[in-house]
Length: 270
Image 1 (tube, rainbow, N blue to C red):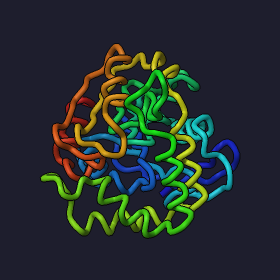
Image 2: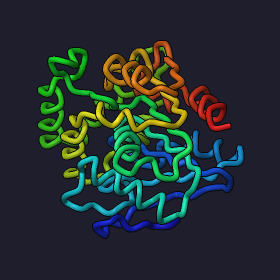
Image 3: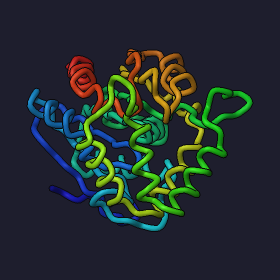
Image 4: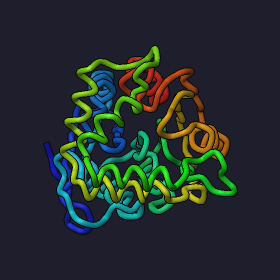
């Protein structure tokens, strides 16, 4: 697998499968590129070139102390696209990865991008504010950081039960829970904590840069990223948005609704 150097020299681990029109998959927190397993395998089989990379500080990428803001993270995405000479690409961001997509579209003018997708994304604005009353309170995010510092493995073990909606009809296997915890524990604790600060960035100014067909998918039972200030708002703000709500789906629908999400991506990219 190739490694691409970011602008500051941070080595990013990249998986590059198949051939055809490129699709860049940007993973959620606190996972890595392997979390796209079902989608990546089937997109490559369907004739796409599938690129998935580990965000700095996560998985097999290097773990610098700094660089966990979205300007830097979108520059990392630009380094992947430029380093692999990708053209006419689709960029697909899940959860935190939606922030890279939004910032790339504005900061890098969507260079090389023909389509975009926001899946369970934090964009346009996750945090509760007077003009965003349905967002997540900052105190909740700060509490997560404190729990991670105190006992990261135990926090993440409980977090994934909520992430995947365990107790809902659409829960996932014990194997996926263990696999997700393993991925999360590969990450730098510094990156795991610092990225929560990045979630509080306001992407509403970035949304005007979406001038390509865009797929937005969000679960109605998402307990991590509430649908109203994110998925539903993004769909209203993006002129060419195709919006799909997964009724009863949790945040981690890439696993709980893997076949449906993969088929929707295939249809959108066709």
